[in-house]
Image (cartoon, rainbow, N blue to C red; front, top):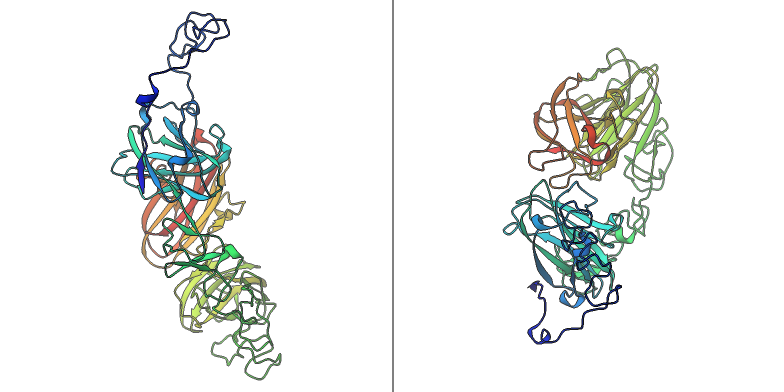
Amino acid sequence: MRFLLALVPCLAAGCAESEPPPVDAGGDADADSDADGDADGDSDGDSDGDSDGDGDSDATSCSLATLIPGGDLEVGQAIDLDGDDSVAPNTEHPGCVLADEGELIWQLVTPDRADLAVRAYDADTDHAVVLSIREVCDDSSTQTACQRVNDGWGDLEAVERDVPAGATRFVFVDGALGQLGAFRVSLELRRILALGDECDPLGRTDRCDAGLRCDDGECVLAVCGDGVVDTEIGEECDDGNAIGRDGCSAVCASEPAVCGDEVVGPTEECDDGGRDDGDVCDADCFVEAGGSCDVPIDARNGGSTDAEGVVTYTGDTTGDGDEETASCGGADLEDAVHRFVVGNDGAATISVEGDGAPVVHAQSPCGGAELGCAAEGTTIALRGRPAGEELAIFVEGEGEYTLTIAPCSDDPIDEDEPNDDFDEAQSLGCIPATVHASLDEGADHDFYVFRVYEEGSYRMATDGPGQCGAVDTVLALYDEDQDLIIENDDDPFAGCCCSAITRDLDPGTYYLDASPLGEFGGGDYDLLVEED
């Protein structure tokens, strides 16, 4: 149900009578308490509301906030709010983006627990706006949601989840990018559904409460063993059963592989229940090599696996001979070879560090085509490999090394300082990649390195479309020789202050440099690299 909110000065029946004027501090009823000759719109002798003589009204945005009575918006309902930010004051600023235009504010009290959402209408809003929600009108630190919506991007919204009953909220609509005018937004209180309620599997409106999930249009209990990883109830995994010792425990916690337990874990090739060599499955639960490569496969030098599924091997190439040369280097360096079996997700990142500037490259099968190559400080990122495929991973170096094989993840990663130059560039690993990062004020630079394995069009941007941060960035793309390819200040689609580069890239190594633009100083930003 949707309502259109309008402000009515008084009802006809209530306008016939009026209260007597209040007695002011001057002892009379002229509403002039400071005896300056006006009606106290200000204190300078006139009634224009301009106390400081700067030519404009001294009213603040919050003092003009429009109250929405709690009864006007019930949970499960929506109303349309119309306004014009070209005639609004500009005394408050959203905390997620730069927006120095006028804003209008609405106040409401939630009648019951709900999600609060505000969305702009494309058809009725022909300019960029910033939608935000606060608990206290004039305190930006109480902001609970913020989203910039460019003209034509009406699917974006600002949503505060799980607002308690009786809570006061202030909804802001700010002009942005120097654009002002009439707008229409939708304000909605969305239901938080209980067990057995009908639900939208896509979660576009009402949602199931914590501990529940939407299954076939109905809110059901989220339980260990239902095959869906429910992080809200603390699950780390869910393999569709509540049985332990299979990589996912009876309470849906990740289990490290234990060689000798007769269960083949995610980092094991076999497990016959024993810890002996010479019986096909060796003492470290790897299938014993039959010499398929010139260099014997050896995956038994200090391997370990942490709770996140990251496999680490330490070894020494000394005395292993030089049988292979990687495409990215390693000539005249000695080789060590590891065997790795691809997991069910078909993805992994592979990196190496150690003596003699080692390089790592992967083949499938051993002695076959090279799948990827990475020098120290960079990463091989594999995606779409068949589950169970056996890879031969070669390390070429001059002594001790550490080989790391980690799962590919779409989860954002945090910036790893220092990354102030090419030599300290942070590896992005798998593409697509998102980095949460921050630039210091002044001449700060954040360098990142990534590798392209397939020719194609790639997009590199700070923040995302319509969601620019509080720092104006410059983004530069360099090739593997550290020569500048292209530089961008402002994304032509998002405007100030995002940066975006879309480029056809050949296979190879590339660097990105993110820096602040001049006087705009530092701040938080996100870096996104993806196939376009």
